[in-house]
Amino acid sequence: MSMEFTQILLNAQSIDASARKYAEESLKQFQDLNFPNFLLSLSGELANNEKPVDSRKLAGLVVKNALDAKEQIRKNELAQRWLSLDASVKAQVKGCLLQTLASPALNARSTASQVIAKIAGIELPRQQWPELIRSLLSNIHQLQSHVKQATWLFSLMCVYAMRNFLIAMRNFYQLQFITTSVYAMRNFLIRSALYHALGSLA
Image (cartoon, rainbow, N blue to C red; front, top):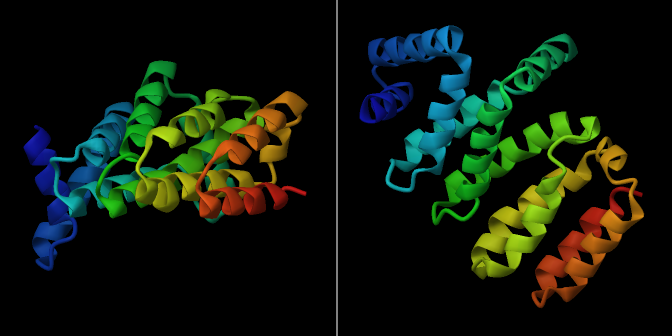
């Protein structure tokens, strides 16, 4: 099933119109019939370093589109659908996304960052996923420099840029933890960019 799902994602990007249409219909049917497993399969594909870059990137984009929309009514519907999922499903999806941030594939890391920002936009204002920031900051010290700059920094800036994030950051000690962690970072570019991101909240 894993290889079949990978092929469907690749076919959804095919120049062959008939193959692409069949793949798109298959993805839509999977989403309608079993949305939790749909998200788990997509996030698992994105996190798997052995999968093709193209299938991983599309998997992440499909997850992102399942979480957000431009039209406000639809945006609210998608947010409520995510919030209504079983906690274990959401935890597995988020775990895969965080795991992908350390992937050697830039496209996968970047896509995971965007999805994390979408989920954070839904959950943080509702006082959910409180461990996100602490997880990002505690693990960033263990990653290679290019991963820090290209992915973790991007994720943090996406999260910090959201005005609603202020609701989840009222606690002074949380802010103190973040600023202390940032100050401790040796990489000047990362430290400067993070201070800039924090400043955007003002």
